[in-house]
Image 1: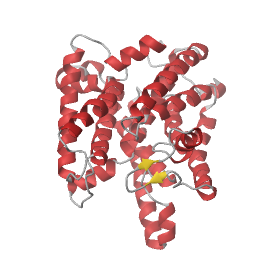
Image 2: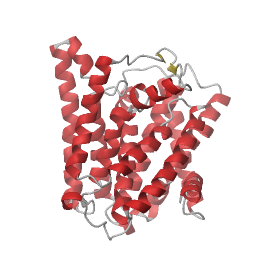
Image 3: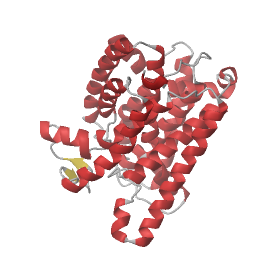
Image 4: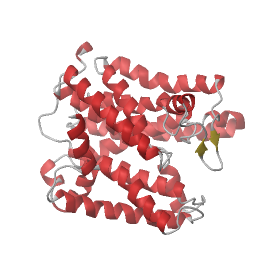
Length: 354
């Protein structure tokens, strides 16, 4: 690797804190997605604030963690072997994501496929160049918004996207104005690759991640608040909503991910302690994030549809439905983990793609 940026992989075994971070990111996505599909109105209470904060940030953390995973794999595996495996897994994720999109238009897996393909091609780059990609992507997106029609294809009242299954519409949605467009969401993935090059076992590194993430998150909110007070038009470019994913949203999502990863790594620094007792089921759930992501759509939303809860529900109803599903996921992960090391989707992906 260039500039001596790549260090040997940690020799102390699995970074258990990353499993818990994945569990938290998955749980956050369940709360957000249930809120969307149940048609829950917004409010002003603690639940509304909690769901509003999670919006976009849980998914961003999920993507950063995927980048960390690829980055750690690059430290253990030669680039040639890693590239071949990653490309096959990308095909698997694209196929799974497109099938999932038939049920849940806000699918993230087909975007993941592109993140992994581009990410593995960037593995030989220096950390400095990767940081440059992270910084430039949000700026490129702002330029794209200025010269292209961001709202093309969208019906904001129904959250439906016309033309998704056409070549033009699919590419536009994938790269520019979909739920998790490659520009600028690839920046989250590349950020994870950069973080994987740090010595994540060191407490000092974990604290830098936590404090740096908290600082970035606070700065995003402060700048957005100041912009709103200075000029209403300026506030549109300083929004924190994931749609559209403008620079301050990217800063807030990145900060949240770094904060969560740093805290989880520091709390679960001892593998022996982390895998014992009450934490085991949560960690097992984190290791089955792909399976549980698919299950929360295929099973969770299927149950909601059967119960007639997919529209016009209160924000409290969506919150407690999501909480019940997360609890059920932890119970499932605990039971499944008693006799299987990997979740069904993880097992299938490894079987198909290596």
